[in-house]
Image (cartoon, rainbow, N blue to C red; front, side):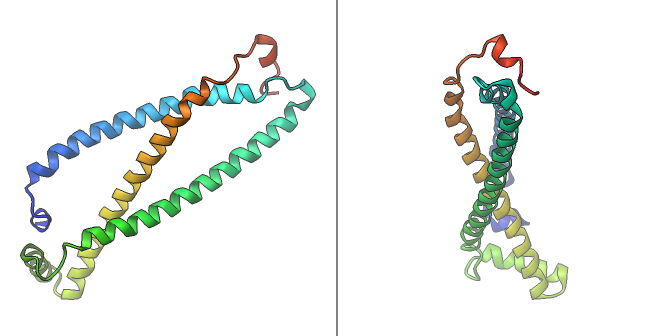
Length: 171
């Protein structure tokens, strides 16, 4: 099995993964709530002090910067994932050598399953690439989580609005 290639038992992998998955789900929920909590105050603060006749221009500029920020953010995230995938792939394949008896046994079993050495190596490499991509996305998630938590105190710096100031928001 692939667990033999990793030279570990299933118990050493399952228990940490269960703990990690619960933490991952909890951190996803926290980030979602933070985004929801921050979105409304930030959009309200954008219009503070603007005359009613300038709200259309302000809305256009805000949408422009939101779209540009999203585009740059997606580009940076994709670059991060590509580079971290390469890093994790290189780290994973360090142990996949002919000197690793577990790897050679697994490769032999895969050769019998797929019928050729090339097909077995391609299947092994596909598995390595999937694992490396997953690790890269986890790295990205942690970076975004840390940046979001660092930005949270900025919401406290936003001035409170009065009813008169918020009447023209959304027009």
